[in-house]
Length: 102
Image (cartoon, rainbow, N blue to C red):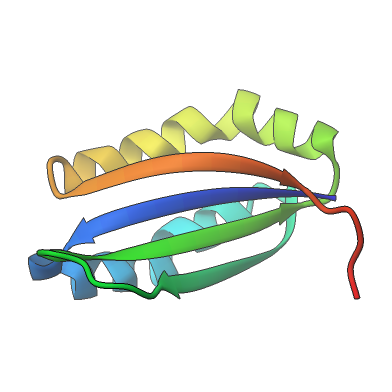
């Protein structure tokens, strides 16, 4: 299993709007691609000046599913996010391989 982790720091003044859009639009759109088995939306704790940080962890069914998602859907979905929240966020992505679940 592979975890595709997207960490987003969002400006405080639009955080509620962003969170609602993520829950109601973006994450459901990502999940509709059928390349992930689940998603966890987490708040990163710590002091933030002017904003909040969230981690969105998508668990891919396989590396092949993640590759297909990235090739077929990622750029469109990332573009939608960027167009809606341009200049109000910073994001980075990490890839994790699940060694074992307990």
